[in-house]
Every structure is written in structure tokens, then in C-alpha cells.
Length: 341
Figure 1 (cartoon, rainbow, N blue to C red):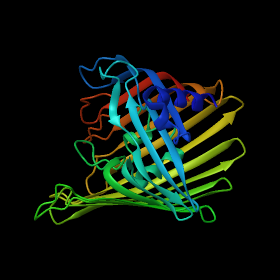
Figure 2 (tube, rainbow, N blue to C red):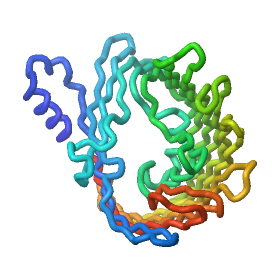
Figure 3 (cartoon, helix red, strand yellow):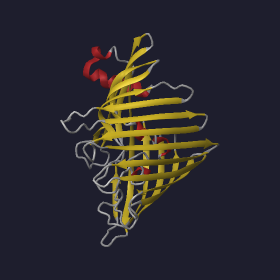
Figure 4 (cartoon, rainbow, N blue to C red):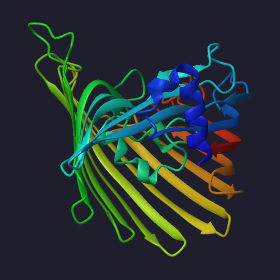
């Protein structure tokens, strides 16, 4: 009720008459800041402390009943700069934003949105997708330096999401190449099928990107994700294969095991992720992350976390400590506060 009153007040400040037909609107957001200490064991590395705004966000969403079970839906969401780094209040700019129609057939939207492939992993991610502790430092990544990330939000997209049929949902996203040429057509197709019912979550994701690294060739990614809830605990896993058709084609093989236990207002969770090229030795990395959280309420949580990412002797993954050298081990220790509204 309080959020709706705030939304009404904001809209009325711009145009009270125009807002009369838009009462079904909600303001929402998340403040997600951490204090992190990061380090690397490479020569010359200096331990650093920083405040991170992570995936702090602000959004507005709503719908309009069009009759006969049909409604118009919309959402505008931006990433907020909570620590002053951006200088203009915005972090990475636009987040999930779209307009569309919804009904018994499902949802059909146009805009800028997380790909279905990316979303399949969210159910077992402990830290959102943007912290130094996130498993997505390795999961969804095709290579260490300058390679493709499949942890993406896709612009210029049209997306269909089906209704739930016995716990099963499908999603399909397509993005045309607005810079298409006579030789390249860098479209994006992302698909998912998920089952989420009775404490069991299972998902399949597929992503196809033609002409991404080599003209006339298609890079692709496939993954399976699962989670099982039992009592006050859950366990999950991801396995994925990413095919890169560069000048020297290779396959990236990634995996993660994760679990969490809830103890009253507290929770403890552990994640282990590993990746690497199947055709080239010593080019992978592994990461262990530990998380302790305490919920003051349904909307406010404090947490402490530790992560260690170890590169193989020929790998240079550097999501924690920028400029890390081959074979280095990077670590991060931090505390954070999350408030959702």
C-alpha cells in the first residue's frame, strides 16, 4: 500500500489527469552495497578496499486490463550508482525494460531483457550476478580474456514466455542484427525450458550466435541447471558447454555445485565453480565462495562473504582483481547490506 501511494504521488506531480487511468503501477528497487577487500598473489599486487554498488536498481512497472483476459504490461528498470562511482546516479544504465501483452497465451514483449539462457542459472546464484563473489565470474564465460559472456541482457529483443503448464514453462528470445551486412548477420536466439514445482527446479538453456567470432560460423551454448529443496536446505548444480568457432575452434566446459542451509534468520551457503577449454590444457579456473547471511526482515539482509578464484597456469581470469596474471589466485572478503522495496 505504501509503495502504491508513493507511485501515485510521483505520477501526480507530473500529470494528475493523465495518471487517472494508470492506477495499477508499482515502484520497486534494491539497494545492494558491499565493502570488499580484494587481493592477488601475483608479484606487485596490492590489497585493495572498495565500496561496490553491485546490482542496485530502481524500477517502475504496471499493467492495464484490456478486457477478455488480455492486459498490457510494461517495466522500466535502471541500475543505480549507490557509491558515487558513476557520477550521474546511474550504474550500467538500462536493466530489464520492456512493453508487451499478457494473457492466457503467456507474455509477448519487446525491449531489453535478460536472455532465457542467463535466467536459467539465477535460481542457484548466491550473490546476484554482479558481485566479486558471484559464480558467474566463471559460469557462462567462454574464455578468460575478451571472450564471449552468456550472462547477458539482450537489446532489441522480442520475447515470448509461456504460461505454466504443470510447472513447465518455455521462453524464447530473438534479437535481429540491426547492423546486418551482406556477409554477416549477428542475430541472437536464446531458449529455455524450466520445471519448478514441489521443491524441484530443472532447466535447459540454449543460446545461438551466428557470425560472432567467425563469419559463416555459429557459436552456441547449452546448459542444464537443477535445484532440490528439502526442509530448510537446498542443493543445486549447473553443467554447460560453450562452442566457440574462432580461428582455432574450441569447446568451453563449465560446471558448478552449490548448496545452502537456513537456520532461523541466518543462512550459510557454499558454491564451487570450475571451467576451462576442453581442447587446451591449463586454461581453466576454479572458484570457491562462502556466504553467511542474516535476515532482519523479508526485505533487509546483511551478509558476509569470502571467495577465492584460482587460475590454471595458462589462464588469466580476472573478475576480482583487474590485471591478474596467468596462474594467479585472487581473493575477496567482504560484507554487504541488501534492502529491497
